Amino acid sequence: MKPFIVPASAKSWIEVDPESHFPIQNLPFGVAVHKNRGEGMVCAIGDYALDLPVLMEAGMISEEEFPWLDTFLGLDKELLTKLRKRIYELLEESHSELRDNAKIRKKAILNRKDLQLTVPIPPTAFIDFYSGIQHASNVGKMFRPDQPPLLPNYRHLPVGYNGRASSVVASGTKIIRPKGQTKGPNDEMPAYGPTKEMDFELEMGFYISEGQDMGKRITCKSAEDHILGLVIVNDWSARDIQRWEYQPLGPFLSKSFATSVSPWLVTLDALEPFRIDGMEQDPEVLPHLRSQGKQHFDIQLEVLLQTAKMKAPQQIAASNTKHLYWSISQQVAHQTSNGTPIEFGDLYASGTISGPEEGTYGSLLEISWRGQKPVSLETGETRTFLEDGDTLTLTAFAQGDGFKIGFGECAGTIMPAQG
Ligand code: MN
Image (cartoon, rainbow, N blue to C red):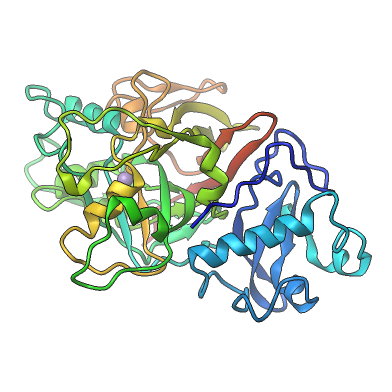
């Protein structure tokens, strides 16, 4: 199916700041919780959002063509492209239908800052990959200093694990410091208590639209037909719990207590102008994971930290999705290569996206190099890991010529352990 790309020169009759994440070229979708009438889909434009059920009620979005737009349910990729195209028509500066209808405009245009946004799609499954090659190398250097930083399988398959879908939460949800078992190198016995190494992971994620039946697989070539759009993911991690539990089956309780996602689902159509080749894969991967064309995206990522004492957040890292070794198509192809079924609403995360040098690392584990190099903050405070009251915010955008395709924010504040 052909992507719908909004021309770089297009403008809306709603004024949009050039620095806004949500120009008419983006038009991402979210789900808002309204006080009186439950959930409804919204589409971001500048400082505003369009209330889609209101537009359907007004006859500006076809009731025959689209499902009732209270959630994403029933929207496949093709329908979402059609819906985005229709919204473009309503917002483009030369179109008068909504522009000149004051009554509907008043009802349908909401202030974005007043919205309570939820998880775009409550995921049916959550899969976390490990496709950031610099992150994987850094972790290898820290934990296996006398061996090659990457394990032998790394360049042959996208390493991943099945995570926990029930604890995926919306940006802004408070994150309770988890408790768990830890054991220091000199401790005789493990102990149970609040993590002392609360960390974040800077990741991008995507949602599956149309699934696939058991026994069949999805090829790299058709994988993107199954991808509805992208979100920012913070895969909160308790490093001390992780270190003690992760062998031999991988992370379990050190990750499953909470995972935050950004509220706006950005379509692949909006990201189309930002495709890049990605890094060379050497050695060549097996035929079932080979893909052609520009399968990666140039998306800039930023990490901001605000302690309880700080008046404004401070940037502590900046990275880019170009540091991913495996593409989203390869992740889907690999996941289904054994015939496992996938379904609408499955959420996939990339793995931590770190760059090659200091200042570009996507976790405090790397930024503080296992606690050896504390981060200095403007207040004079230092951090090796997150403390109670700290707010960690991830943000992402692709920079176009005079506009940004942004994701908004994925934020969470750490609360004291309970119980
Ligand atoms: Mn992760």
